[in-house]
Image 1 (cartoon, rainbow, N blue to C red):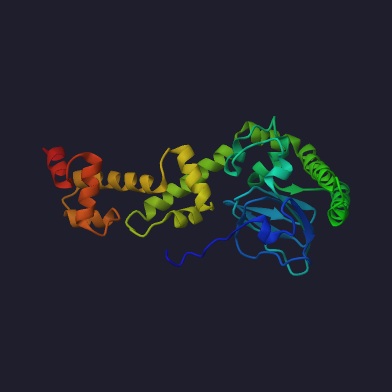
Image 2: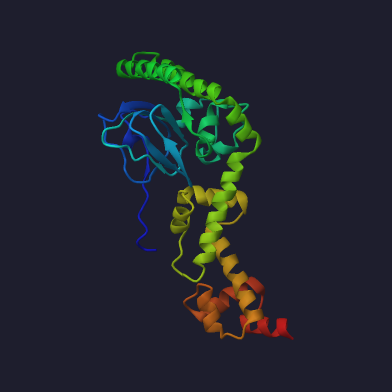
Length: 300
């Protein structure tokens, strides 16, 4: 696990010329080719070159005339073909949601009644936003207006850009209203969090004997950022990653002690402890008695 590739999280200052709103095509800056995250919102518009997008734990179609809506801190990558073309829009949370004070990791809990513009971002892992030619022509016209307003940046251009951005998002919401409302009623984003938690638990179970197991590795296995996994664990379980792993190791230790005659050194090892004495100290702290006494009392 020490060789797990590091997944980069980018700030606006690293991938944008401005800190509030930035629009470009592929000629302005090379596309990222490895999975990554960023602290800002992003919309990608495929002008040509069929491909796919990897987002969270899903792989979605991304042919021409498709838009991708990416929340902050969402793991993703779109492998654009060499002969493809696309437009990318980066914007800060404060630019889109001026009146919403919210941790970016809690955006999935914001009511869509209050912020309907979040809908395509919330459900991107469940839906492909592929537009017909006439609707896509309206989107490209908005992109041209955005690029011109962004190029001049006169007084009031930020408000104009925000208006164009909301028109683009609003059009997609109108076109996909039945699907978006159905996903909202089905609480698809909560299902996505449950799926992520399930991937984390599977990873912990499969690597419980590895004392080098880390939050970063578990997050990568669940297609999450370490910060988001920490936030999710606190929200869903009230525990940190270390507390959760320790609880699972103690649970396995109890099972081993009650159902096997293996020596304590072996049980310590299969539970992810390299040192039997340390295992015994942690077990005593958790259960009020050393593991040998626990085994004797449970079997008596």
